[in-house]
Length: 158
Image 1 (cartoon, rainbow, N blue to C red):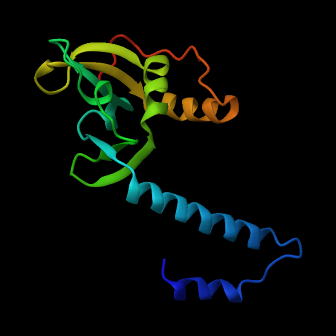
Image 2 (tube, rainbow, N blue to C red):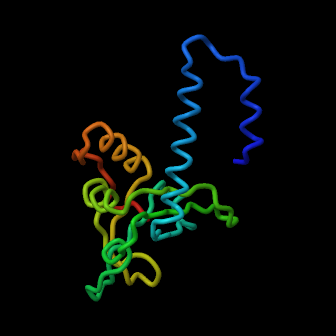
C-alpha cells in the first residue's frame, strides 16, 4: 500500500472512542508482520487443483511408499502454503501457516492414507478444509492442539 493510499483515511468520520485509529494502527503492524514473514521466511508451497472442489479436502504429503520422507515429512521451511486452484487453473486462495503448526494439525485432524498423490506413490493425510479451520480455532483458543473427534470417511477422496 503506498503512502498516498493512507491519505484517504483522513476523510473518514471517526467515532469518539478512537477504535478506528487503534484498528488502523494494528492493521499497519499486521501488514508489516506479514511482509517480514514473506520476505525473510522459507516457504513450502503445495498446490491442490483437481479433487479439492469436489471433496473439500486437501492432501498433506509426508512420504513416499518406499518410506522416504517427502513434503511435510522432510521440509525445513518456516511456512507452509497451500494453493487452491479451480479446474480452469485460476488460483482462488493461498492458505499460509507456520509449518510447525501444520505438523501438529495434520495427524490429529487428518486421516492417514497411503497409495495417493501422483502415481499413487505417496502417503500423507487427507485433511478436510473444514477441519483445518476448526483446528485453527482450537489452536487459537487453547494455545495447543485439542483433539476433536472429526470424522473423515475412509472412502473420501483427496
